[in-house]
Image (cartoon, rainbow, N blue to C red; front, top):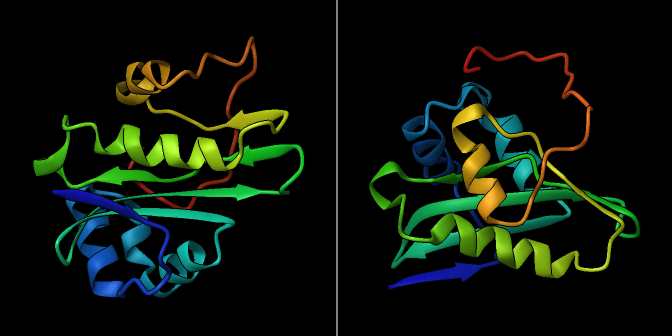
Length: 134
């Protein structure tokens, strides 16, 4: 049975296992990744027993805007609705805010559309990025 939690006592090893399994370059900066997640405005994790199987976080001003930078589920657990549950919990926390934002890779666009997101008009995501996984 998968349970969701907003706990903040996540171990680096658990986080790294999840990020490496999904080939996210943030795993190359373990201390920064750990601190970034722990200091997120919102953090929801998914657990099967003591195993971390998914995580999502939110950055927000708490009044107008929320941004969802990370949503990961272990590959063996994908397709079971875990990511949707994590995102729904985060969206509930920020219900009523003026703007909910995220950047989706091509493979994830259909997933986020199922979760209620739509393309942002003619805007384009832009970044200065220190990774190699996109």
